[in-house]
Length: 83
Image 1 (tube, rainbow, N blue to C red):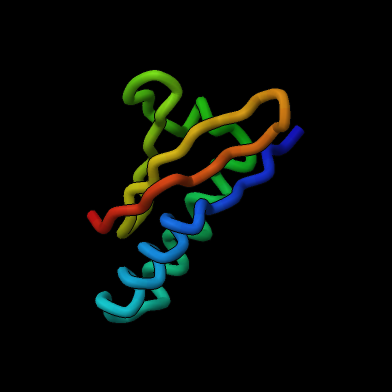
Image 2: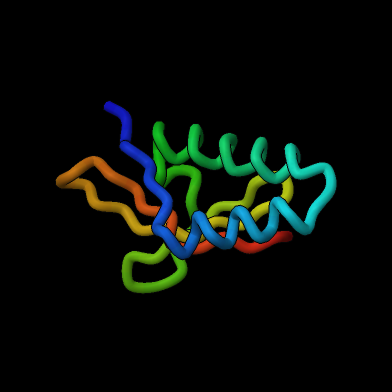
């Protein structure tokens, strides 16, 4: 069963900011989409635990921080950073 992946408002705004600063912007969008697809399948398997339920995953150009709600089968990306 897959997880539903959502971006917090803060993470979405940061993703837009990064995409505006990096060329080509499509590389940032592709990295975010790749991260989303990996998290849909197995968030704990592809993520790395940081502390108290916070995980991170690296894509081509991005690092995404996320939390997992197993009961709701949802992953929330709470922040993104450029690598």
